[in-house]
Amino acid sequence: DAKTTQPPSMDCAEGRAANLPCNHSTISGNEYVYWYRQIHSQGPQYIIHGLKNNETNEMASLIITEDRKSSTLILPHATLRDTAVYYCIVSQIPYGQNFVFGPGTRLSVLP
Amino acid sequence: DAGVIQSPRHEVTEMGQEVTLRCKPISGHDYLFWYRQTMMRGLELLIYFNNNVPIDDSGMPEDRFSAKMPNASFSTLKIQPSEPRDSAVYFCASSSSAKEFDTQYFGPGTRLTVL
Image (tube, rainbow over all chains, first blue to last red; front, side, top):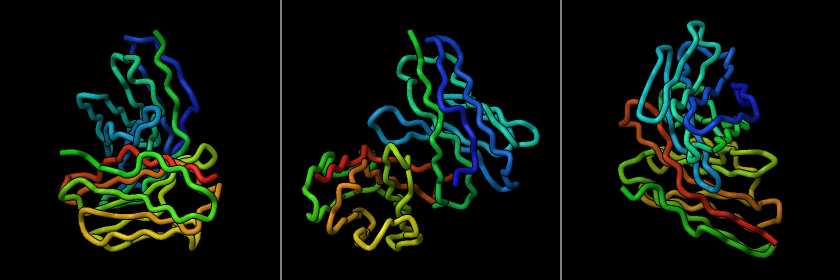
């Protein structure tokens, strides 16, 4: 069973920031938060991950609350190509963990 | 890098036939994963390998499914006999324990239709 809860769908205007929330209230101390996305008909693509600190890379920013029970993925300037299903996953290190993909959030970026 | 390569990209077969899906992971990666995606069940892990050895096959739906990894650059997922309910998109992914964290890189998938 997925350990995360996400809204099923969201809309965002092109050029605006897209803020995708995720609840993971049962996260344990050694579990990381990962975000992947899946553009239609393609394989899932890694976006970003974090443990407790906020993280930023060329694709997005990840904000994790202090109690680590929720997080927000931020796409600062959404484009039409960001339309996809976004998955929030919690998983331990080391490697090869069973990533449990929930239904995710279907983000529609509107022109 | 070419990324994870899967073949065929599309497969249409009739019920009862044997189906073999193929995957070439990214060179140097020591983990390989097979996933299945359907509208009803979403994306679910079937099996994964570490250094060519199957580690967890608890997601394999039944004995009709089998997976092998004869070497570090090749894996197969076989369904025999196939059934209409096996129709899905099958993804292969690979990752490297040499990396700081576990990023799985997915292939483009094989869309299987069993008539």
